[in-house]
Image 1 (tube, rainbow, N blue to C red):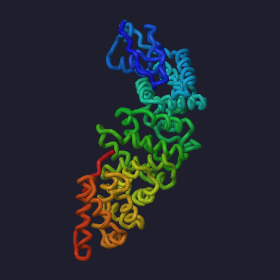
Image 2: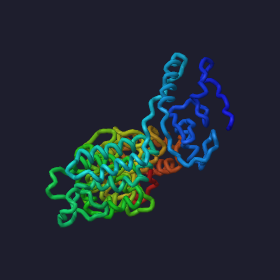
Image 3: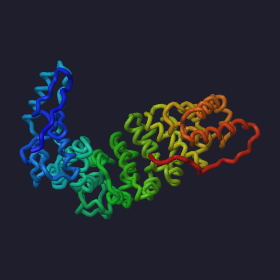
Image 4: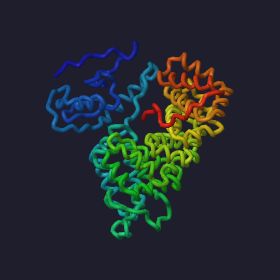
Length: 440
């Protein structure tokens, strides 16, 4: 049996009892679990040990045929009591760990979800909520849920408001195969039922593979359903639908996904309306992220301009957090590579002042996108050039060039300075179609 080294105390006054320490990390255990050999370890340490390819017990060196981890509740309570007793000496009480997901419990929840009759909506909602709560805990839970085959089942619940073509009576409960061809039920009293909404809330917490993405992307009726939820669902359902759309678009192996989503009737309009209608942090974040993703394709930019995205993005810039500001500015620069988008941004009363305001104030990436957008709209309109000069852009550009920001940002700033110096006698043509914006 390996010798267990002693650890130095937490401080000069506190010595951790030996049996409270994990034999692997030698640190105070926060979530003690018992291995099949009877030895206790901290959960995170033994999981890392096994994940590294080890198949033996670290202390006894016995080969492990059973990797089940059983929570040692008694030891955890003793550790918590010890922490409380030593609080005055700087020891913080370890929190009670939440029970992690395990394949058996996930399969049980999935079985409840698929076996519950269509009339028992409450049972299906509880099952979906249980999966969602487990998925929100950590990445490990999400992987266990996905590996248990939950995603197709949850997608089926999301689209259970979509009936089969021709009104096939065999699918009225909405629990048919995820690849079935479906259309919206004509007699549905709501755009999105509670089951569908809970399904949307659950599915956006889990990873999607490309086959699962295609099960939605290749079905016009499912896209129509998402479009309808985006425009007419509850506030929460609209945010969930927007998040799912962004997830569906995020695949390196499916470059056509962004085009499919951007050109689907009502989806871009729904995203823009979401951004205009809702002011919550979550809604703004999800809306901007989805619009940015779809604007990475030409068809997406064109539909975004038609839907009024330039105005919505500009008006939200003053109410966004750092990452959202970057994406909003990135989307604006992308829109400025089209004639319609550049015109819309140039004609907005707030564009110049808002874009100048963010230079060197948010991040290097935000500065770069703002400079690119200003270059585009100043190249588009002499009126905008004069407005920018009056708003103090020259000072900001000079500061930008002297800063340690990106080379691309400095190049855009220098080109903009050259343009503004010759504001009275230049005859440059608009340079649409060029951008350095990259996906996040």
